[in-house]
Image 1: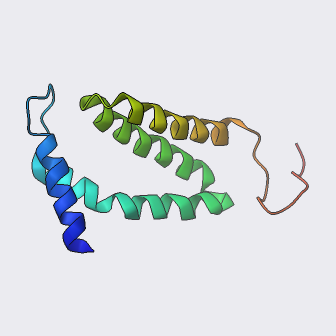
Image 2 (image 1 turned 90 degrees about the vertical axis):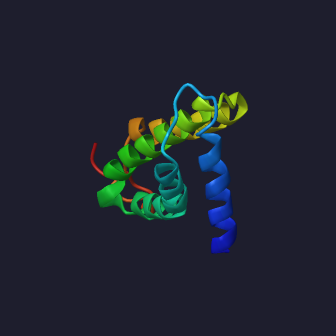
Length: 110
C-alpha cells in the first residue's frame, strides 16, 4: 500500500514542477500528500466531539482551501467545483445553530 501511495505522491509532485504559474517544491508536495489521510481522519474525529467542533470546522476550511489551491493551479475546474461543495458544507456546519450534543433531540437553551 505504501509503495502505491509513494508512486502517486511522486506523480503528483511532478505535476507541480511543470510549466505552471506556481511551482512547489517536490518534497513539500509529497509530504502533504502523505499526511492527507491522517488529516482527514483527525478532522472527522474532531467534528464528532462537540467541544472541538468549532476548531475542527476552521481546520476543515484550511484543509479545503489547500485542496482548492492545488486544483486551481492545475486548472482542474470540475475538481474545483467538487471541493467547493465540501467547503460550503463546512460553512453550513459553522453557520447553522449549534446544539449541545449531536445525539440529543433537544437543542437546549437558546
